[in-house]
Image (cartoon, rainbow, N blue to C red; front, side, top):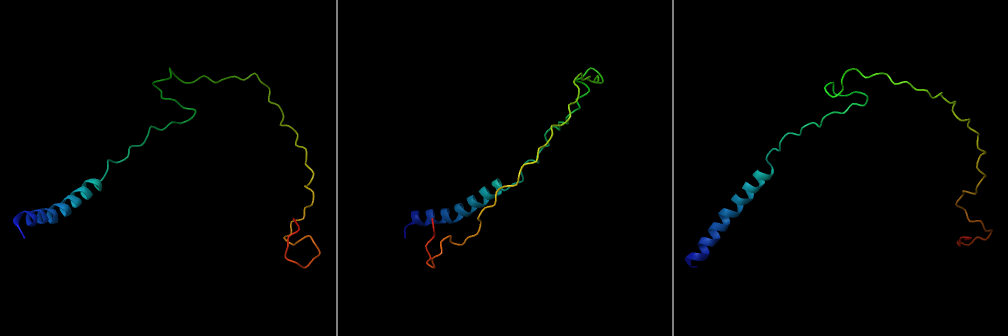
Length: 95
């Protein structure tokens, strides 16, 4: 065996595992810790944005009573068995 193929084989035997280990180390390093997004609360605001306490709102609408619920009749009876509807003793469905 000449000198060039041996050197290439030695370089491959050393370089490939080292490269794979280095790549795995770089990809598996700990990521930056996640940051919590700003919390939005409904009904409150940042005090620096509002000029002061919020004024209560007045409503002029009168509250309506909820609509009456009318009962629905029960559904009609259905044939929900898996038996054939024909009187023959064959295995054909009656479709």
